[in-house]
Image 1 (spheres, rainbow, N blue to C red):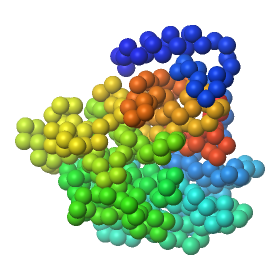
Image 2: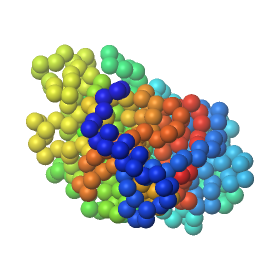
Image 3: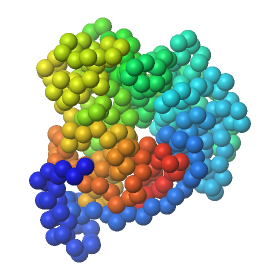
Image 4: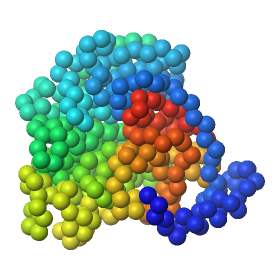
Length: 398
Ligand SMILES: [Ca+2]
């Protein structure tokens, strides 16, 4: 894409005006971008989907059709959970289209309770379902045990249809918020009724306890499943929490337009409703791909006047928006507090500048290779880990 906003020129001017290379302190100028160092930590992986890093440097990663593995600080790797060959085999693990093993998150007390959470497609039910599984890892990072399935009823697209194959739009990111609760992102499965359904968990952001129960304080509308934090989403691929306020921000694919970053409000409606569009031709009743930003908006403020407004819609384009992660720490210089957003088809890492309300006021691209950015995780040491669809995991440091 070559369209540029006026602020782009302003950013260039700022970048040119800041040339002394020193850290200006707590409020560095907008153009004070860090120089990036990239180290390839792992390569040759099979569709890595997510990354979690422990304080001691152990690096957990998922591969969509294999499961969960860990790379210890000494570089050795063990397959902990998943298909045959894993320390703990999951015979019910299924891998279909986009679906399989997705997000991984460490318990906030991981250092003492050794507990983590994985999002996976399971054949334990019929039809199959996406679920969140809790596991305990031993001190040496060589085994996993105590599997407990804490959320078992996240919908899965079992059958392909005119708008796409089986397994589409499963969401799948899991992250703990600063409030200590687990946020789980889901997708619409190409099912027109899921995003606005009060009871089915597709097209939602869930907020649950470490046992999978509804987190206290969720405020969805009356009649909704109490685990629902926000609804009306399409396929949420990223969730991260703004430093300071702790407000969750999501990133999600647009259909053929309008990738969206959205600051979430407890109980809010994301405004995606791909059903009942009488002026559109909707194969299988799914109108998601049938329109444009006006006729099939990612945030329909006509149907839902109070819908959560996006912070950014990627210039109205869809380039396959993937994960999102706030950058935190003065080592990130002018990017401290900015939002990194991984773009897959667009093959870039966007860095967004937000105002106090969370709206995007500027965007630039990180000076990193063009690839499909699948996962972003800020490690305890403040470095950014990236997983790519090309099978690599990088450590990026400013
Ligand atoms: Ca929306």
